[in-house]
Length: 405
Ligand SMILES: *Cc1c(COP(=O)(O)O)cnc(C)c1O
Image 1 (tube, rainbow, N blue to C red):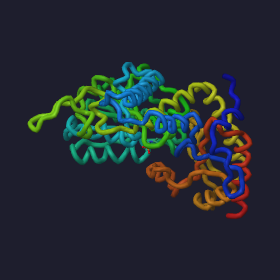
Image 2 (cartoon, protein in one colour):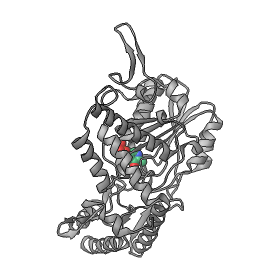
Image 3 (tube, protein in one colour):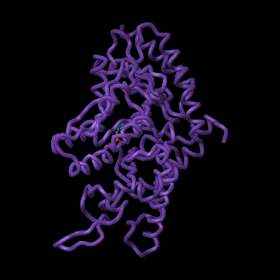
Protein backbone atom coordinates (compact mmCIF):
# COMPACT_ATOMS: atom_id res chain seq x y z
CA UNK A 1 0.00 0.00 0.00
CA UNK A 2 1.31 3.47 -0.87
CA UNK A 3 1.59 5.82 2.09
CA UNK A 4 -1.47 8.06 1.74
CA UNK A 5 -1.46 10.42 4.72
CA UNK A 6 -4.91 11.88 4.04
CA UNK A 7 -6.45 8.44 3.81
CA UNK A 8 -4.69 7.40 7.03
CA UNK A 9 -5.86 10.53 8.87
CA UNK A 10 -9.43 9.85 7.78
CA UNK A 11 -9.27 6.58 9.78
CA UNK A 12 -8.83 8.55 13.05
CA UNK A 13 -12.11 10.26 14.05
CA UNK A 14 -10.44 12.33 16.77
CA UNK A 15 -8.15 14.07 14.28
CA UNK A 16 -11.19 15.90 12.91
CA UNK A 17 -11.88 17.76 16.13
CA UNK A 18 -10.86 21.22 17.21
CA UNK A 19 -9.29 22.30 20.51
CA UNK A 20 -9.68 25.91 21.64
CA UNK A 21 -11.11 26.70 18.16
CA UNK A 22 -8.01 25.37 16.35
CA UNK A 23 -7.78 22.06 14.48
CA UNK A 24 -6.17 19.61 16.91
CA UNK A 25 -2.45 18.97 16.48
CA UNK A 26 -1.83 15.84 18.53
CA UNK A 27 1.85 15.50 19.43
CA UNK A 28 1.58 13.45 22.63
CA UNK A 29 1.90 10.06 20.98
CA UNK A 30 4.59 8.87 23.38
CA UNK A 31 1.99 9.07 26.18
CA UNK A 32 -0.71 7.34 24.18
CA UNK A 33 -1.60 7.04 20.51
CA UNK A 34 -4.95 7.83 18.92
CA UNK A 35 -7.23 5.02 17.76
CA UNK A 36 -8.37 4.30 14.21
CA UNK A 37 -12.01 3.49 13.43
CA UNK A 38 -11.02 -0.14 12.75
CA UNK A 39 -9.95 -0.56 16.39
CA UNK A 40 -12.98 1.28 17.75
CA UNK A 41 -15.24 -0.92 15.57
CA UNK A 42 -13.65 -4.09 16.92
CA UNK A 43 -14.53 -3.07 20.50
CA UNK A 44 -18.09 -2.08 19.59
CA UNK A 45 -18.42 -5.24 17.49
CA UNK A 46 -17.49 -7.47 20.40
CA UNK A 47 -19.93 -5.85 22.83
CA UNK A 48 -22.70 -5.60 20.23
CA UNK A 49 -22.46 -9.09 18.76
CA UNK A 50 -20.67 -11.73 20.81
CA UNK A 51 -19.99 -10.50 24.33
CA UNK A 52 -19.50 -13.54 26.58
CA UNK A 53 -16.93 -14.86 29.00
CA UNK A 54 -14.23 -16.94 27.38
CA UNK A 55 -12.60 -20.38 27.75
CA UNK A 56 -15.25 -21.94 29.96
CA UNK A 57 -18.48 -21.84 27.99
CA UNK A 58 -19.94 -24.47 25.69
CA UNK A 59 -22.42 -22.00 24.21
CA UNK A 60 -21.87 -20.33 20.86
CA UNK A 61 -21.22 -16.79 22.05
CA UNK A 62 -18.56 -17.98 24.47
CA UNK A 63 -16.88 -19.94 21.71
CA UNK A 64 -16.96 -17.01 19.32
CA UNK A 65 -15.44 -14.73 21.95
CA UNK A 66 -12.81 -17.34 22.84
CA UNK A 67 -11.87 -17.78 19.18
CA UNK A 68 -11.54 -14.03 18.62
CA UNK A 69 -9.44 -13.60 21.77
CA UNK A 70 -7.12 -16.50 20.95
CA UNK A 71 -6.90 -15.36 17.34
CA UNK A 72 -5.65 -12.01 18.63
CA UNK A 73 -2.99 -13.84 20.64
CA UNK A 74 -1.85 -15.59 17.47
CA UNK A 75 -1.74 -12.29 15.57
CA UNK A 76 0.50 -10.87 18.29
CA UNK A 77 2.68 -13.98 18.22
CA UNK A 78 3.13 -13.70 14.44
CA UNK A 79 3.70 -9.97 14.54
CA UNK A 80 6.51 -10.25 17.09
CA UNK A 81 7.71 -13.60 15.73
CA UNK A 82 7.48 -15.49 19.01
CA UNK A 83 8.02 -19.24 18.68
CA UNK A 84 4.70 -20.14 20.37
CA UNK A 85 1.35 -18.45 20.95
CA UNK A 86 1.44 -19.57 24.60
CA UNK A 87 4.53 -17.42 25.14
CA UNK A 88 2.29 -14.35 24.67
CA UNK A 89 0.67 -13.42 27.99
CA UNK A 90 -2.09 -10.82 27.92
CA UNK A 91 -1.57 -8.24 30.67
CA UNK A 92 -3.17 -4.89 31.51
CA UNK A 93 -0.03 -3.22 30.11
CA UNK A 94 3.72 -2.72 30.34
CA UNK A 95 3.74 -1.80 34.03
CA UNK A 96 1.85 -4.95 34.94
CA UNK A 97 4.15 -7.12 32.81
CA UNK A 98 7.25 -5.74 34.53
CA UNK A 99 5.72 -6.28 37.96
CA UNK A 100 4.83 -9.85 37.02
CA UNK A 101 8.46 -10.64 36.18
CA UNK A 102 9.85 -8.74 39.19
CA UNK A 103 7.50 -10.71 41.42
CA UNK A 104 8.54 -13.97 39.76
CA UNK A 105 12.21 -13.27 40.41
CA UNK A 106 11.67 -12.66 44.11
CA UNK A 107 11.96 -16.41 44.66
CA UNK A 108 15.01 -16.74 42.39
CA UNK A 109 17.29 -13.99 43.75
CA UNK A 110 19.38 -13.88 46.89
CA UNK A 111 21.73 -11.52 48.66
CA UNK A 112 24.86 -10.91 46.59
CA UNK A 113 23.03 -11.19 43.27
CA UNK A 114 22.98 -8.14 41.02
CA UNK A 115 20.43 -6.80 38.59
CA UNK A 116 21.12 -4.05 36.03
CA UNK A 117 18.92 -1.20 34.89
CA UNK A 118 19.74 1.74 32.61
CA UNK A 119 19.83 5.45 33.37
CA UNK A 120 17.24 6.00 30.63
CA UNK A 121 14.29 4.20 32.19
CA UNK A 122 10.65 5.03 32.79
CA UNK A 123 9.69 4.85 36.49
CA UNK A 124 7.76 1.66 35.80
CA UNK A 125 11.04 -0.04 34.87
CA UNK A 126 12.81 1.22 38.00
CA UNK A 127 10.46 1.01 40.97
CA UNK A 128 9.39 -2.69 40.71
CA UNK A 129 13.08 -3.67 40.67
CA UNK A 130 13.88 -1.52 43.70
CA UNK A 131 11.06 -3.30 45.49
CA UNK A 132 12.54 -6.63 44.36
CA UNK A 133 15.94 -5.63 45.78
CA UNK A 134 14.38 -4.74 49.11
CA UNK A 135 12.71 -8.14 49.28
CA UNK A 136 15.70 -10.24 48.22
CA UNK A 137 18.83 -8.30 49.19
CA UNK A 138 19.94 -8.20 45.54
CA UNK A 139 21.73 -5.05 44.38
CA UNK A 140 20.62 -2.66 41.65
CA UNK A 141 23.33 -1.39 39.26
CA UNK A 142 22.80 1.38 36.73
CA UNK A 143 24.21 1.68 33.19
CA UNK A 144 25.10 5.39 32.93
CA UNK A 145 24.11 7.69 30.06
CA UNK A 146 26.09 10.45 28.39
CA UNK A 147 25.22 14.04 27.45
CA UNK A 148 23.70 12.89 24.14
CA UNK A 149 21.25 10.69 26.01
CA UNK A 150 22.77 7.40 24.92
CA UNK A 151 23.95 4.54 27.13
CA UNK A 152 27.66 4.14 27.89
CA UNK A 153 28.22 0.61 26.70
CA UNK A 154 31.77 0.32 28.03
CA UNK A 155 30.36 0.93 31.53
CA UNK A 156 27.70 -1.73 30.92
CA UNK A 157 30.40 -4.27 30.07
CA UNK A 158 32.15 -3.47 33.34
CA UNK A 159 28.97 -3.95 35.36
CA UNK A 160 28.35 -7.44 33.99
CA UNK A 161 29.67 -10.39 36.00
CA UNK A 162 28.67 -13.83 37.17
CA UNK A 163 26.70 -12.03 39.92
CA UNK A 164 24.41 -10.47 37.29
CA UNK A 165 21.08 -12.30 37.14
CA UNK A 166 18.86 -9.95 35.18
CA UNK A 167 19.20 -6.89 32.93
CA UNK A 168 16.23 -4.65 32.04
CA UNK A 169 16.31 -1.71 29.68
CA UNK A 170 13.83 -0.02 27.44
CA UNK A 171 14.01 -0.49 23.70
CA UNK A 172 13.31 3.21 23.13
CA UNK A 173 13.38 5.95 25.78
CA UNK A 174 10.02 7.69 26.11
CA UNK A 175 11.67 10.85 27.48
CA UNK A 176 14.36 11.34 24.82
CA UNK A 177 13.54 9.00 21.93
CA UNK A 178 16.93 7.24 22.10
CA UNK A 179 16.90 3.78 20.52
CA UNK A 180 19.03 1.54 22.73
CA UNK A 181 21.37 -1.09 21.24
CA UNK A 182 19.32 -3.94 22.66
CA UNK A 183 20.83 -6.62 20.41
CA UNK A 184 24.23 -6.01 21.97
CA UNK A 185 22.76 -5.58 25.47
CA UNK A 186 21.02 -8.97 25.24
CA UNK A 187 24.03 -10.75 23.78
CA UNK A 188 26.43 -9.46 26.43
CA UNK A 189 24.01 -10.35 29.25
CA UNK A 190 23.62 -13.87 27.93
CA UNK A 191 27.39 -14.30 27.95
CA UNK A 192 27.23 -14.15 31.77
CA UNK A 193 23.97 -16.16 31.86
CA UNK A 194 21.83 -13.22 32.90
CA UNK A 195 18.24 -12.95 31.67
CA UNK A 196 17.04 -9.81 29.84
CA UNK A 197 13.75 -7.95 29.96
CA UNK A 198 13.10 -5.32 27.30
CA UNK A 199 10.50 -2.62 27.95
CA UNK A 200 9.02 -2.11 24.51
CA UNK A 201 6.26 0.33 25.49
CA UNK A 202 7.78 3.07 23.38
CA UNK A 203 9.14 1.02 20.50
CA UNK A 204 6.27 -1.07 19.16
CA UNK A 205 4.51 1.84 17.46
CA UNK A 206 7.69 2.65 15.52
CA UNK A 207 9.40 -0.65 14.80
CA UNK A 208 8.57 -4.33 14.64
CA UNK A 209 10.82 -6.34 16.95
CA UNK A 210 11.66 -9.94 16.01
CA UNK A 211 11.67 -11.70 19.37
CA UNK A 212 13.31 -14.93 18.21
CA UNK A 213 16.06 -13.08 16.43
CA UNK A 214 16.63 -10.87 19.47
CA UNK A 215 16.69 -14.03 21.61
CA UNK A 216 15.29 -11.95 24.46
CA UNK A 217 13.88 -13.59 27.60
CA UNK A 218 11.05 -11.13 28.32
CA UNK A 219 9.55 -8.34 26.22
CA UNK A 220 6.69 -6.16 27.45
CA UNK A 221 4.51 -3.59 25.75
CA UNK A 222 1.18 -1.74 25.96
CA UNK A 223 -1.46 -1.74 23.21
CA UNK A 224 -2.50 1.85 23.87
CA UNK A 225 0.74 3.27 22.50
CA UNK A 226 0.29 1.34 19.25
CA UNK A 227 -3.23 2.38 18.27
CA UNK A 228 -4.94 -0.14 20.58
CA UNK A 229 -7.05 0.49 23.68
CA UNK A 230 -5.84 1.16 27.23
CA UNK A 231 -5.84 -1.61 29.82
CA UNK A 232 -4.28 -4.29 27.61
CA UNK A 233 -0.73 -5.23 26.74
CA UNK A 234 1.48 -8.21 26.28
CA UNK A 235 4.26 -9.93 28.11
CA UNK A 236 6.39 -12.21 25.98
CA UNK A 237 7.83 -14.93 28.14
CA UNK A 238 10.27 -17.44 26.64
CA UNK A 239 8.86 -20.92 27.21
CA UNK A 240 11.61 -22.06 29.60
CA UNK A 241 10.88 -19.03 31.84
CA UNK A 242 7.15 -19.70 31.77
CA UNK A 243 7.91 -23.04 33.39
CA UNK A 244 10.41 -21.64 35.90
CA UNK A 245 8.48 -18.61 37.18
CA UNK A 246 5.65 -18.91 39.70
CA UNK A 247 2.20 -17.45 38.92
CA UNK A 248 1.70 -13.78 39.78
CA UNK A 249 -1.90 -13.83 40.92
CA UNK A 250 -4.14 -16.66 42.02
CA UNK A 251 -7.72 -17.07 40.88
CA UNK A 252 -9.90 -18.55 38.17
CA UNK A 253 -8.49 -19.42 34.76
CA UNK A 254 -4.91 -20.00 36.04
CA UNK A 255 -5.52 -23.37 37.69
CA UNK A 256 -5.48 -26.99 36.57
CA UNK A 257 -7.15 -28.39 39.70
CA UNK A 258 -8.16 -26.86 43.03
CA UNK A 259 -8.78 -28.60 46.35
CA UNK A 260 -8.37 -27.08 49.79
CA UNK A 261 -5.22 -29.17 50.26
CA UNK A 262 -3.43 -28.24 47.08
CA UNK A 263 -3.91 -26.40 43.80
CA UNK A 264 -2.07 -27.24 40.60
CA UNK A 265 -1.52 -24.53 38.03
CA UNK A 266 -2.55 -24.38 34.41
CA UNK A 267 0.05 -24.33 31.66
CA UNK A 268 1.13 -20.99 30.18
CA UNK A 269 -0.33 -18.64 29.05
CA UNK A 270 -3.24 -19.30 31.47
CA UNK A 271 -0.92 -19.77 34.45
CA UNK A 272 -0.23 -16.02 34.27
CA UNK A 273 -3.74 -14.87 33.37
CA UNK A 274 -5.85 -15.19 36.50
CA UNK A 275 -9.45 -14.00 36.34
CA UNK A 276 -11.63 -12.79 33.50
CA UNK A 277 -9.34 -10.89 31.16
CA UNK A 278 -9.89 -7.71 29.15
CA UNK A 279 -11.56 -9.63 26.31
CA UNK A 280 -12.54 -6.69 24.09
CA UNK A 281 -9.10 -5.17 24.73
CA UNK A 282 -7.30 -8.29 23.55
CA UNK A 283 -9.42 -8.46 20.41
CA UNK A 284 -8.88 -4.76 19.72
CA UNK A 285 -5.11 -5.17 20.30
CA UNK A 286 -5.20 -7.69 17.44
CA UNK A 287 -7.13 -5.20 15.30
CA UNK A 288 -4.53 -2.51 16.05
CA UNK A 289 -1.73 -4.82 14.91
CA UNK A 290 -3.62 -5.59 11.71
CA UNK A 291 -4.07 -1.87 11.14
CA UNK A 292 -0.38 -1.02 11.64
CA UNK A 293 0.65 -3.84 9.34
CA UNK A 294 -1.60 -2.66 6.51
CA UNK A 295 0.31 0.62 6.62
CA UNK A 296 3.60 -1.22 7.08
CA UNK A 297 6.46 -0.50 9.45
CA UNK A 298 8.87 0.52 6.69
CA UNK A 299 6.47 3.26 5.59
CA UNK A 300 5.78 4.27 9.20
CA UNK A 301 9.49 4.57 9.94
CA UNK A 302 10.22 6.57 6.78
CA UNK A 303 7.40 9.06 7.42
CA UNK A 304 8.24 9.47 11.11
CA UNK A 305 11.93 10.02 10.32
CA UNK A 306 10.96 12.72 7.84
CA UNK A 307 8.85 14.41 10.54
CA UNK A 308 11.66 14.09 13.08
CA UNK A 309 14.32 15.57 10.79
CA UNK A 310 12.09 18.40 9.61
CA UNK A 311 10.99 19.31 13.14
CA UNK A 312 14.50 19.04 14.59
CA UNK A 313 15.91 21.44 12.05
CA UNK A 314 13.07 23.96 12.38
CA UNK A 315 13.13 23.91 16.20
CA UNK A 316 16.91 24.25 16.42
CA UNK A 317 16.64 27.42 14.32
CA UNK A 318 14.85 29.05 17.29
CA UNK A 319 17.33 30.94 19.42
CA UNK A 320 17.78 29.61 22.94
CA UNK A 321 16.13 26.27 22.16
CA UNK A 322 17.94 23.15 23.32
CA UNK A 323 17.04 19.58 22.40
CA UNK A 324 17.73 16.78 24.91
CA UNK A 325 18.50 13.42 23.33
CA UNK A 326 20.76 14.01 20.36
CA UNK A 327 22.12 10.54 19.64
CA UNK A 328 22.01 9.25 16.07
CA UNK A 329 19.80 6.25 16.90
CA UNK A 330 16.61 8.07 17.68
CA UNK A 331 12.90 7.86 17.02
CA UNK A 332 10.32 10.62 16.49
CA UNK A 333 10.40 12.15 19.97
CA UNK A 334 11.76 15.66 20.59
CA UNK A 335 12.35 16.79 24.17
CA UNK A 336 13.32 20.44 24.40
CA UNK A 337 13.46 23.60 26.49
CA UNK A 338 13.85 27.27 25.73
CA UNK A 339 16.19 29.25 27.91
CA UNK A 340 14.24 31.13 30.59
CA UNK A 341 10.89 29.49 29.78
CA UNK A 342 9.27 26.93 32.10
CA UNK A 343 8.10 23.85 30.15
CA UNK A 344 4.69 23.99 31.82
CA UNK A 345 4.08 27.55 30.59
CA UNK A 346 5.12 26.56 27.09
CA UNK A 347 2.71 23.59 27.17
CA UNK A 348 -0.14 25.78 28.37
CA UNK A 349 0.27 28.28 25.54
CA UNK A 350 0.61 25.53 22.94
CA UNK A 351 -2.66 24.04 24.23
CA UNK A 352 -4.38 27.39 23.75
CA UNK A 353 -3.30 27.03 20.11
CA UNK A 354 -4.76 23.51 19.84
CA UNK A 355 -1.37 21.78 20.06
CA UNK A 356 -1.06 18.84 22.47
CA UNK A 357 2.44 18.21 23.83
CA UNK A 358 3.59 16.77 27.13
CA UNK A 359 5.52 18.75 29.71
CA UNK A 360 7.27 17.61 32.86
CA UNK A 361 9.60 14.76 33.77
CA UNK A 362 7.87 12.11 31.58
CA UNK A 363 8.03 9.52 34.38
CA UNK A 364 11.81 9.59 34.04
CA UNK A 365 13.06 11.81 36.87
CA UNK A 366 16.62 10.38 36.86
CA UNK A 367 17.07 11.66 33.28
CA UNK A 368 15.91 15.15 34.29
CA UNK A 369 18.27 15.03 37.23
CA UNK A 370 21.14 14.11 34.89
CA UNK A 371 20.49 17.27 32.85
CA UNK A 372 19.71 19.29 36.02
CA UNK A 373 16.34 20.47 34.68
CA UNK A 374 12.83 20.19 36.17
CA UNK A 375 11.42 18.80 32.95
CA UNK A 376 11.10 19.35 29.23
CA UNK A 377 8.49 20.02 26.57
CA UNK A 378 8.08 16.81 24.61
CA UNK A 379 6.62 16.63 21.11
CA UNK A 380 6.22 13.04 19.93
CA UNK A 381 5.13 12.24 16.39
CA UNK A 382 3.14 9.35 14.94
CA UNK A 383 2.71 8.22 11.35
CA UNK A 384 -0.57 10.19 11.09
CA UNK A 385 1.13 13.53 11.83
CA UNK A 386 1.99 15.88 8.98
CA UNK A 387 4.68 18.40 8.06
CA UNK A 388 2.00 21.12 8.31
CA UNK A 389 1.43 20.10 11.91
CA UNK A 390 5.16 20.47 12.54
CA UNK A 391 4.88 23.99 11.11
CA UNK A 392 2.03 24.70 13.55
CA UNK A 393 4.20 23.46 16.42
CA UNK A 394 7.17 25.58 15.40
CA UNK A 395 5.01 28.69 14.98
CA UNK A 396 3.40 27.99 18.37
CA UNK A 397 6.76 27.62 20.09
CA UNK A 398 7.94 30.92 18.59
CA UNK A 399 4.78 32.66 19.73
CA UNK A 400 5.06 31.22 23.24
CA UNK A 401 8.70 32.22 23.43
CA UNK A 402 7.77 35.81 22.55
CA UNK A 403 5.04 35.90 25.18
CA UNK A 404 7.10 34.26 27.93
CA UNK A 405 10.60 35.65 27.61
C1 LIG B 1 4.48 4.31 28.65
C2 LIG B 1 5.70 3.61 29.08
C3 LIG B 1 5.68 2.71 30.14
C4 LIG B 1 4.45 2.43 30.95
O1 LIG B 1 3.43 1.88 30.18
P1 LIG B 1 1.97 1.69 30.81
O2 LIG B 1 1.10 1.48 29.61
O3 LIG B 1 1.65 2.95 31.55
O4 LIG B 1 2.02 0.51 31.71
C5 LIG B 1 6.86 2.06 30.47
N1 LIG B 1 7.99 2.30 29.80
C6 LIG B 1 8.06 3.14 28.75
C7 LIG B 1 9.35 3.34 28.03
C8 LIG B 1 6.91 3.85 28.37
O5 LIG B 1 6.97 4.70 27.34
